[in-house]
Picture 1 (cartoon, rainbow, N blue to C red):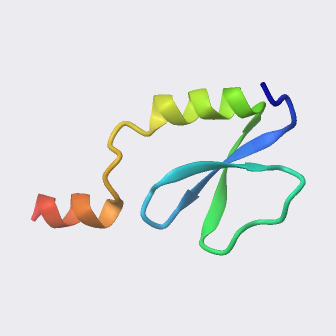
Picture 2: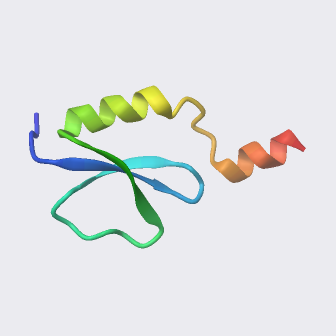
Length: 63
């Protein structure tokens, strides 16, 4: 397990990922404020990302 600090990031389609805290932001992604070990970040994403469809797909289907 990687214990280096990571953070949870999200893009405009509300898709989540993790990113090492020592690296700069990637265009199109921004931090959610959650920081922890790699596993803690993955666990957090699993808890909050319950609908894996991109936001645009959810919006289209909701019409």
